Length: 383
Image (tube, rainbow, N blue to C red; front, side):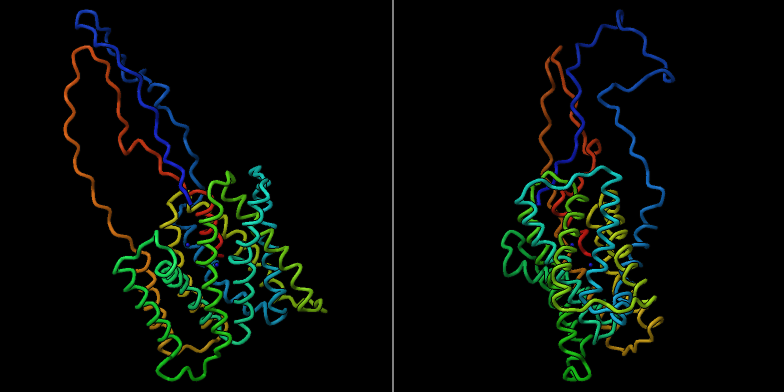
């Protein structure tokens, strides 16, 4: 619903080697069966997850793809603000439980909490509420496709505001292709006839909130010292508090609790905002944020299939064609130019006899660096 990075952990260099003994005094090598690696080369084994990352990737795609169907069903029994408050409350409960199990601590800095309050508004409270209001008048399939425009908005912002992220020609072309797909989905050649413009506008505005929130998080929450899970859980907690204040001002207390909408809101929060965050958290750690963010391209496909198959929503030819064009454009905006390999270093002169030498760590010795909390928090907030 895409900060500084911690440097990759590199094993310490081996201590200087003593001069090689002569053949007459060198001790025999130890047998292979009893030889042990030096302490500096021993690394703790990381427990492998019970489920392969591909299975969790598919599960995450399904959960987020069905979220728009759950929003639609939830709004049939509750006001949009109530749907958002319910999903944030259930999602926060899941993350608080996970934080308690992992003994994570909440951030202590008042400055961090202030920035998290803004992030909660931009990444949770506002877009979730806009999608809920949008689906009062537009189908869930259209809402899911609008959600896929977030990379396009991010690219547009980088063109006009982020001078440090200079776009390439391919990425600019992807921006144009993506918005051509949006016009195809909306049926621009028909004058947008039959389209609910306010509802569609709210869905597009909700998608625009995500890259704005990511930029804010990246620029303000760098180096907080808190873990990704702690930052994300705190952010959802603040979003829940914001909705707890706003909801009574614009809605009245529900007089009944219909079963299907209630279950939809609870599933939307516990799965789409709670469990999905934990799944994405694990994927970012295991395969990196680039691969984990690929789930974005499966969400509109699943949302469209779910809306048509389970809610009976109508689908004209321009909707899937336009959605495909949007995804192609979004993929182009996320492409990066291949880094130019550095020139091969000149061979070092041979060390003088009896001069101690050190072992230089090879690239394969370094562990893959995990994303820092602000960048990962932005990635995880897409729920």
